[in-house]
Length: 382
Image (tube, rainbow, N blue to C red; front, side, top):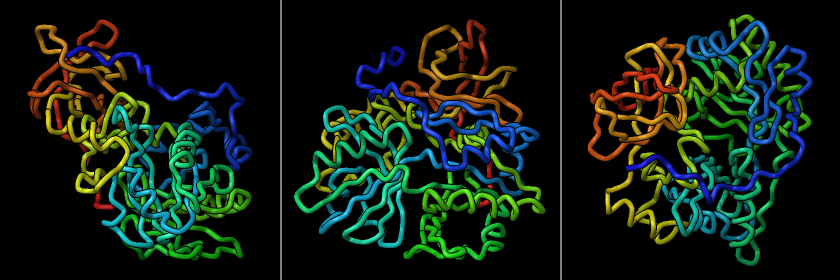
């Protein structure tokens, strides 16, 4: 198979000034290195920390992340849960309020992933959604176009902030603020928890593999919450963490990033995300084309690559056999701070399996790699 073609169906990116988080002033005061991420100015790493220290803090102790750039949207009205369940891949009927679920919004015609997101099952008549930053408007647009009379879909991107608290000592941090921690994975507070008179939703989740929580305060309450969390992590040797560490942490776990490992060209089948597809549901966007692709078993599949030589695999690098035959393409790669080795996620031809020895072409230099099944590192169950 050849490399991935140009993404002719990629979502348009609006030419607009970068937006800022409610914590923008806090980040700059901490000496954060800022960069554009999905149209938002967000911290990549902090002065005195850096990706390596921030990554290690999360794996060993605790770190806090501003992820307020993530989208927020609501679907409300009689039968909201059934409506959302007819649109997105995962089956809401496998859970019950107050639980959240990972799911995907796929294109009806191609099966490509418009976005992957978290859906909070608040009630039969209300679903709260957290899409990726750059895709929020498109997800909302598609839902609004499909919504029956009586269902309201609202973009609430700047109504709420989101702060992630991640690491083995994350529960201690929340306890210091008087926030609840005794909940199952992907459960959230059924009613907004009051903290200093401010309402905050607490979700037991995260994108690092470590035990963690995602806190959803009102937009204007986010700075006060951040300040309290910074005070709480100080004597735990915790750190504020940027999106650089978030990326190395998620890659070590093999978690996909939309736009790299999932996209309009990379379907749930290719990404091995079929576990988040309700195949027995009567309908969801893209079901027919995805079911056909699944039955044919001809598409490339996602694997992990562990570098056995010195070097870092990077996105779009070709993956070959020793004889130069192209068998895949890297979708994302980094240096693992935990393993001190290059790691990557890649789409590989059928027939490739764990333990195979391949080569990544890194700017003309051959980097030997071993095919592995992620995660690359083992962590305590979250």
